[in-house]
Image 1: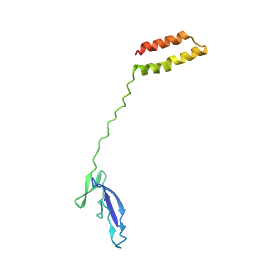
Image 2: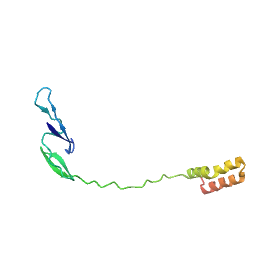
Image 3: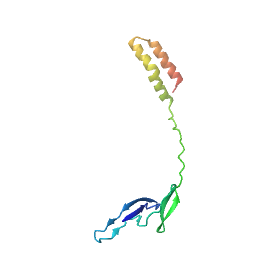
Length: 121
């Protein structure tokens, strides 16, 4: 025996399954909660079956508008974070060039002073 399942809160049809036969009463089938033995009607596109007052009714499937796409907001940075990033990208390479002897300490210190002026505390 087929049973037609529906959701417990909206009563919308979800699936068709086989009912289990009662182990105590042969020939009697167990209808689970939120199910009926009343066959569903043919469901056209754009509709859904809903169990209402012991009968299936066809309803339009509600159209839910898509969520608007909101671009992510970049995180706010502090001057200290910008300064740290500039040190890493701009002055650290000059420091290592000075350590290897391919640049001078003055070039490195000038870059450090430039970054401090650009991103003050």
